[in-house]
Image 1 (cartoon, rainbow, N blue to C red):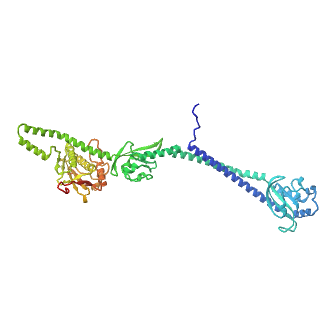
Image 2 (tube, helix red, strand yellow):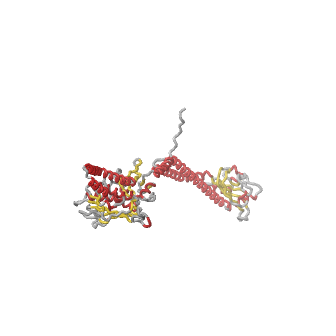
Image 3 (cartoon, rainbow, N blue to C red):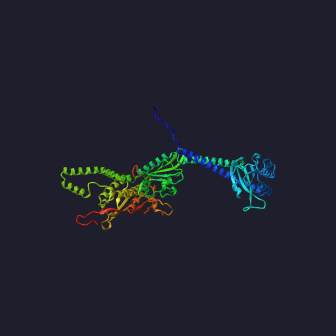
Length: 577
């Protein structure tokens, strides 16, 4: 046997449409039925009131009252032939003809018919109970008699000169209107009801189709089960990835702001906020402009992190769903790059010094081979005093920290290869040991790279970079603060306005005066912004001491890094303070 096949289940939007149509049809039918019943009941009450009025009129006629009293006083009832030609029959039929009633019946005090539309019924007892009317009460009725179903009234007939409620009742008058005539009246009234019901049903059907179309558009044609699955998948993916994701809907509001984006931008959940008012870097806003190219990616600094941001247009078919902004954290990568760069430049310096070291060994071997032992000893003493290797950094002996010595030595080699002299200022004094080399490398390396670039691009004859490093011990044995001053021989910083009164403009993401990066593959415009944010995160800062001037000297930067040094123990006791 083949696999069992079942009917394809109806789509949710189709089920909703059918349910709405059923509800609308049911409401219209119930409303029409209730309206028709109320109309029928109203017409029945009007017929009863009309019958009651006619019965009172006939019962109050003096001739009818006198004739009924005379017949009631007799021992028997006159024969039908006499009643047919009598005045009561004439009065009853005249009233019936004038008003269109189904019947006008007059009886004596025992309920025998004295007047009736059907002559064969004269002298017979009425088919409905006349006792209430004969007891002096006026009643309205709906029943079925010998002439068919009717709505009518029964009114007592009083003897001449007497009246309710104490007069003598000598008979009663029954008047009825056919319910068939009521149905005909209802038929005339039902046409507007049917038209109204049909209009309401048509409006309900149209509204249901419009609602179905809007529902399908809002849900992108997805079924509830698919939407539920998508929500679960979205939460699992967006909250589980390390990349920041910002979703901007077509109406310009943030619809998605995952945990990684909150961490990278150091912001609370901004979902529901207008994207134009969101407190995020301006470069992110620029990515979602109408004229922005989707392939563009920018580097921004936010929350002390270096981020790479890109944006993509979100489309479903031809429908514009908005934008998706992706954020990738490159902070750790940049830190590692700085450290690897320091190691790489130091390795390059060691390779450059290898030849000098080999020449020194050959010199010592030459002195020994010709018997110049004293000169060999003097030469070794000089090497012991100055070290076998020499970095191209002036006054390098002012540094005591081996990390700073190696890092600045490597930077000196790199600067020397570009024709720039790196030197230490005379006020340099570091008595402690660097305990946060990663942050120090990032800040100091960025400042030196920018200074070397400025010196290379200088219009003056000299090309130099001067670095002064000072440490201040912390109170009560706390970590100390490292102060770094970096100046160069460049042409200074450009003014952002006519007065040059915007010193913080150089710390904006993307600002750069370099034509080429300091190293191959390095980005531009993020170094100063990242250095300042790292320093401020530690409670310090990076500021511009002097903007410099064309032709040199160039700009001077000051970096303050609290908690980055510790005093080293003194062999004779105490600290090197």
